[in-house]
Image 1 (cartoon, rainbow, N blue to C red):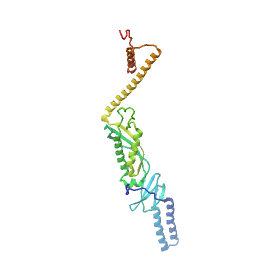
Image 2: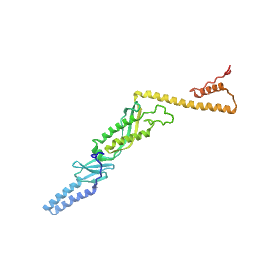
Image 3: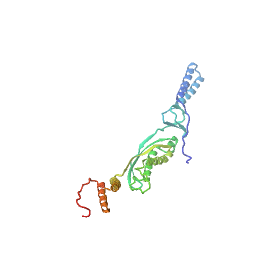
Image 4: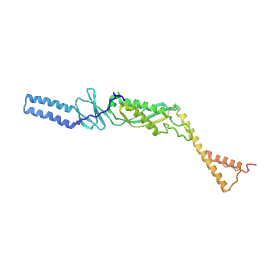
Length: 296
């Protein structure tokens, strides 16, 4: 742990309206007494009261909801106030206000290589907010610029850890690997963990993080699209053949059980061939009238 890292600590403040009331009394009462009984003592009392009134008015500040004020005294961090409304604190404090509201941004589209070395375009939508104001202000030079730079680095690292898509058939009994395209939840969880690890130094927490853009780079997009189309055709044909084989088996078993037709091996093979052609063809079957036999 870095012992020089700043840590947020709470500092108390007073009600600002009470400070205004005290300041008005400190000015009004000495003026009344000075006009009623002018004397050197009254003049001295008026000067002291005026200085105190200036301190009352000088320590006023206002905070909106989800806004914090960091107090600095001669360059030393004294604490953070997260109270709302009109407040009062030591007038010698330098008050630096910072928003702790949730913020979001869409990263630029980055061109990187995935796990298989394919160039892809990737971008993410990230929601973040300041959790530790002291870290955000004192441990990094510019926390907004820090977030943008570290987010880009995290997205690049994420893209290198996963393939865009699983283009290879999974081995029998093995689960398909998580990819950027198919593993939406897993990838989002990994991205959030990566961002939280990088943002921790700046006292920033990640509210949400998801990929907002994912595509192959233009130079290979056409080729990969044709490959996906070919894979889809092969997959569809595989399903068709599996279904056709089942239908042929069902038809042959049904004929045999009912004794409607006795087939030798050659006729059985011919029927199987014809049925498969009809069921697997991508065009309507054309009937052919056979006037002969398989043997003549």
